Amino acid sequence: MSDGIVVTGTFTDDSFAMDVAQFLGLRGDISDEVSLKTYANGEFCPRYISDIDSMDRVGRYLEGKVVIICSVSISDRSRNDCAMRNMILARAAKDNGAKRVVLIEPDLFYSAQDRGAHRFGDIEKDRDISDLKKFDGQAFTSLLYAKLLKEAGVDTVITVHNHSLKVENLFREIFEGDFHNLIPAEIYAHYIKTSDFLQTGKDGDNLVIVSPDKGAAPFGNRVCSTLDLPECKRIILDKKRTGEREVSMALNPASEVDISYLTGKDVIILDDMVRTGSTIVQCCEYLKEKANPRRICFGVTHFYSSHEAREKLNSHFIDEIMTTNTLPDILNRDCQGRLRRKIVVLKLGQWIARYVLRLFDMDYGYLSKQFYMVDMSSKNPRWPPLSYLK
Image 1 (cartoon, rainbow, N blue to C red):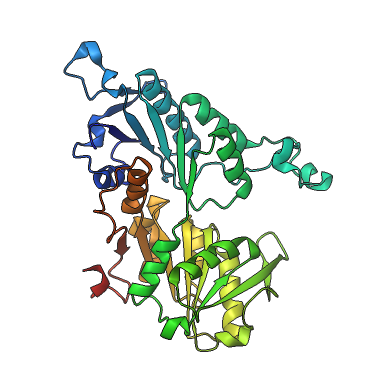
Image 2: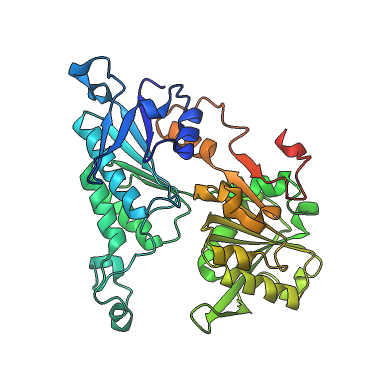
């Protein structure tokens, strides 16, 4: 397996790339695969160097191999910098004979910039003129990014829980179907059922899954289905913005039960990302005041650990937070701040590696039982003992 795959990160000592390489079964140090050098003028110039002992063949060892570029956003590098590094690394791999270049970018860059100033064929056929006018003068950056990656030599893109159907569709078109949006429903479901994060009750009769808006409902439905708890109920909320960062909440008619059903139950609100925390805190406050659940938890895939988010999510309306390491900074206790007493991080390295192995028909089953890892601060009251981690 290791003979056919090369893994690199976009910066030295990338712990996320190291995890993926380890779980793929690669035994070497990924920093020995490529020199991530930067010239004095600030330009990035990587060089694949595994065959450095044969100076006549530097880089040629990539011929016929799969190169996997792991790209994550970290606080001390801009996403613009990381995006450019992706493209140069991909180009270097292809120029040196790589058969296939795979980009693993758990939090796909520029996904929020999924609109431009004009219609782009069928991609935006649903938009009216008043909506288009809001974006006069700006670029459709997610479309540009997809095209640049393809031109640079990327063949396959793997991401996690991308929120934009428009972005997913355009990436699928540009990469001819070789775009993979991994949804961590099985990880969330497994953790909810096997830990003491929430009390599900008999067949889920003590558990309610809440979507903070209609956009988050498909993910909530998917987690609920994966839980396979027939008595678990679903609620969808509607949010209305009353200011730049103020929202009000109401029950969506598509909800399975009324708000009063939540009284005394365990509730988990599921969403794809959190940046400021305003919507989630408002949602939790609404549920607490209307029904007074026993426990309200928040599950989110992409956690932007800003000062504002940490302060707002420290709210007494939220009992605990479950997230992933798609943005690895959240593993840092300083980035968790006061939230370290109520946060648990589910690490996705094994899960993503398992998907890659299956993609290349190399799944030998060793990642089937333990397919993710748990990171929790000792400040969290549930640590230790954690019998489900043993």
